Amino acid sequence: MNVIRADVLAQASRMLEVVESRSTGAAERLHADPLAELAAWTEIRVAQVPDTQSDSRCSVAGGYLHDTKPPTLTVTRSLSGGRQQFTALHELGHHLQKTDARLGLAVRRQPANPEAFEDAACDAFASRVLLPDDALAAWPTDRSPRAADIVAMFEQTQASRAACCVRAVERLHSHGFVAVLDAAGTVTFAAGRGDVFPPARGTSQAATPLVAAALRRRISVQVDTTYASYRDGSTSLELYGDAAWSNDYLIAVAVMDRPGWKPFARPRVEPDRFVSREVTCEVCDTDFEPADRCSRCGTPRCPTGHCNCTLAAERMCEGCFQKLHPARFAGPTARRCKDCTG
Image 1: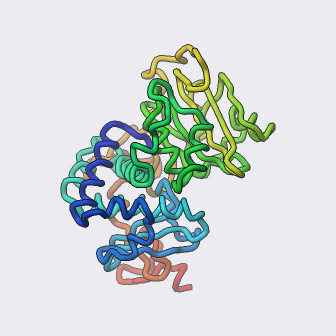
Image 2: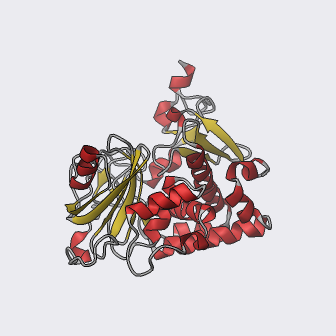
Image 3: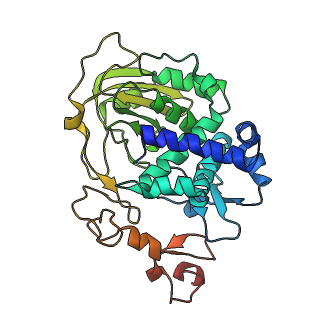
């Protein structure tokens, strides 16, 4: 679950400092053209891959392969140009956090779900490279941004919708989330702030009141009652919602109070009554409430028994360049998975 918190933003700021320390002016060059700048880096390489080879555990359609020499940032080939730029920067964020001691320590010190912290920091880093603070100067400072504000930013800049959404989440004045959905109401990207978990990538929100109204009417809509729908069938408590179309994509903003599109709105509930304390398994992608922790690595164990120890046992297939569980290989010395060896 990609939740933007104060410590996530602090990590993103440190990542920008690391980029500049490695190459003066790199942040500005990345802002101008991330893929062109990264192509000149010798410490990583960027590879475009089919949809099937992106890392489904990431909040973006890409992946970071640290076992290659040099490490590889993978970007899904079918993405739009703007989304490829955002994805490449997101995966660069993983590289920075894996190769800088201070950044890595901040990840390891997370008391719960350090992978989610790392992923959220990657999104915050990528969005700040593409959209510096001065790009948000026209946004209100006392209320949450509207969906139309996010659409306008996307249309007026080179940033992707995902980057615009992350920056919008930073400006939410309430617990809430911002999401990008396709024309069928399926989440392609989402991020949350405070104690609101955003809906996961790939989940359908078509039945939620806000998205259903937008899909039915195909115009910008605001509702006083909506919610997020999660993979396990549960929903969040009620939120105020605003949605606006950006070509064939829908931008949705949902907050507990102080919506930017209403002059006054009563807070829904106290924040500590709202949040579902679910986390997502990094192996099987199941949402669950952590009731058991691994005694070895200290991370929550999903109902199937996966934890960070499971991730540590994974290795990369030299055929499809995916990190897979050892059971997917014919033996401990096999360099290609069973799918690649036929």
